[in-house]
Image (cartoon, rainbow, N blue to C red; front, side, top):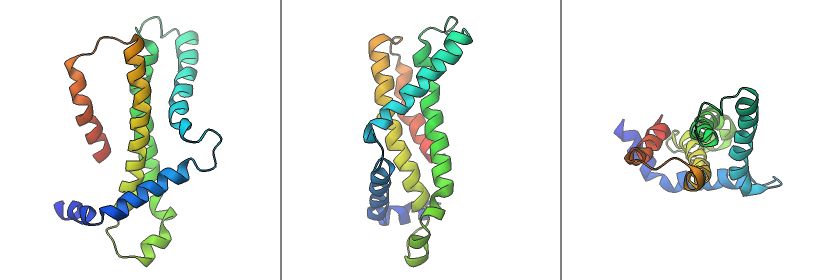
Length: 154
């Protein structure tokens, strides 16, 4: 198992280049570009607040309902985007796979790392919500980097 990680470390420049390429391609021809990393979770949260908070009346039972939604939506979006991106990554990189010798696990790792970067961007929104109107911070927040690491590995 460690041999695979050693090979990824030896080819880290390729990994970083693939991550950079994924970041450039992701927002290249979009209207809002990089801001979509922030708008997507906010708009999805707004839809959930309206549908489940107002229509379903869940917001009455849960204090800080938008923050509650974001703490579940952001990791879920990261997980689903990573799973989809990693499973489709070999199909999008067929030329690279057939013409170069390198550890193949770099391709899905680059896709997951790109989604991790976008997840970290969207965490800025959650931190902002916590700072403005959220519940008090607890020592349990020290576990967040560890949880993010395990989610990345998963």
